[in-house]
Image (cartoon, rainbow, N blue to C red; front, side, top):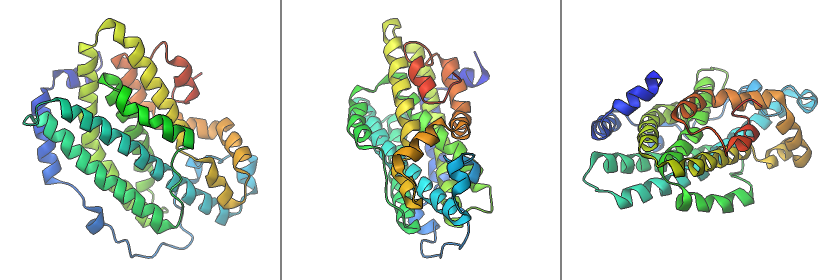
Length: 303
C-alpha cells in the first residue's frame, strides 16, 4: 500500500472533517469580491497555453493565425469551465444525497455541506468568467447532459468519490500550470488560483472516502464500482472540449473534433492531467475489469 493510501486509511473521518472545516473558515475566496470583473481583458494575451489546446501540433493548428489560436484557446477555456459547472452541479447532488442519509451533527456531514457551498461559488465564478470573456456556455453534448442525470441516482460508494476526484484533479493539474504562466490572461489566472486552492480540501476529503469505501466494499460490488467510475471518466474527458468551439475560428466542428480526438498531443494532455489521480485510483483498486475499455478510450491510461 502506498503512503498516500496509508495516510488516507489511517485518518480519522471526523478529525479530518474538523480540520477541513477549520481550513475552510480560515482561507476561502468570494469571487464576487476577490475578482475584479470590471478589469479590461489584456489585448493579445492567451487564455490557454498553446500546447494544451486540443488542435496543437496538427495541420489544422498550423493553418490558424496567431489571433485565431488565441480565440480557440478562449473558447476551449469556456468549454472546460461550462463543463466544470455541469459536473459540479452533479457533484453537489451526489453530496446532498450523502448528507441526506447521515447525521447532520457530524463533522463529516457539515464538511460535505461546506464543500457544496464552495462548489456553488465556483459554479457562479465559472459562469461569470465565461460571460466576461465573451464566449458561449458550451457545456457537454446533449446526450451526456441527459445521461448525467442518472449519476446522482446510480452513483454511490468509492466510485462516487472517485468520480469527483477525476473531474477535480484533471482540472487542478491544467489550472495549476496555467495560473503559473504570466502570459495567460490575469482573469483566467485568478479564477484558476481560487479553484485550485479550495479544491485541495475537496481532494483530501474525497481521497479518504475512496479508501474508506474500498475497505468496506463487498466483493460482489467491485465490478460495478470499477465499471461506473470508468464510464464517468470517459464522459469527463470526452466532454471537456465541445466540438462547437471550433466554429469560433472558422473550422468545421465535426472534422476538427475528429482531428483533436486523434491528436497525440491532445491525448497526452489528457493522460498527463489525470496522471496523479490515476495512480491513486489504481492503488486503491478502482481501475480494472470490467472498465478497462472505457479507461483506455478516455486516454487516461495507455493503450
